[in-house]
Image 1 (tube, rainbow, N blue to C red):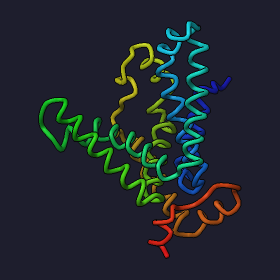
Image 2: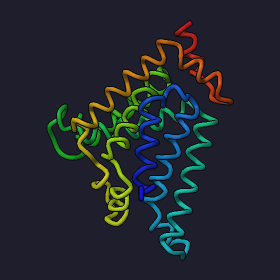
Image 3: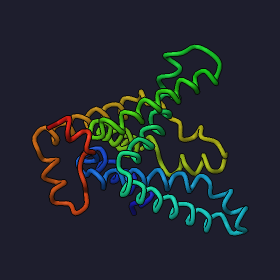
Length: 217
């Protein structure tokens, strides 16, 4: 029997990989829900201790709150949500891949460089919304579809109270191949006009922010 904890993340990853940016506000909401659920799950032990409930209940509460907050922020503050997600993913990518290559120093020097990279991606998210969305959804989609990030890795991170289990090598061939394919597919959908057609069909999907509309106009 198929394990939903395996199938669901892969299916969500494929959706984000192929049409994350095309889904506009829905794509951002899905990313917000994923990150919110992950964050809520990670802090579940703290919630359990503070509230005096079991870890399973605390995990459910944390995941639910994380999903609700992620979806609401994405719905009400689209550019800000993309910027926040971009900061998180940019910092993650900087910490695991770019900072060790670009700088040579103590851990706090690499951390500072990673944060600077995250800030740059966040700025891009507020000014080049669609372009940043393509990159972010391809990154998350590839990580889930390739099973580079799994529920088991988050469970290990929660048990160890450490981010190490969810840090992965972003230069892995399968992950990189899927990310590149996702970027190319989404650019193709945008250039061929399918993105606007899909957004027009989905109620409340929204579109680009005003600054990007003016730039395209």
